[in-house]
Length: 139
Image (cartoon, rainbow, N blue to C red; front, side, top):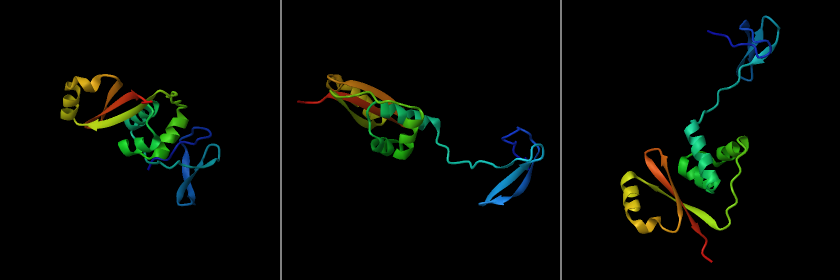
């Protein structure tokens, strides 16, 4: 078994030195430093992080992003804080979204009336497509 590298002196000469809280401890032979290897947590693909941040910038709420991507809204909030993303102020427009498969998207775009009076963005979402439209609030 390969032992980890010492975080203090970067020496590969570490030996096992007991277990604390069900985690293996190591001691560096070179500097005598005791350390525990970090736990490997659940890793979420960067594709979903990028999509979540894009949707947040477009004005979609954390809970809606959770429903769309299947990623916890708390994770989305943490990514927004981590990458210091600021959502633009949206007072006159609000986004609506639809999840469509390829055939539904083609039919929607064929109807020219659906494309007038609003901004629109289409993005891939796994094997489907997400269409985000911005319409003015009706007064």
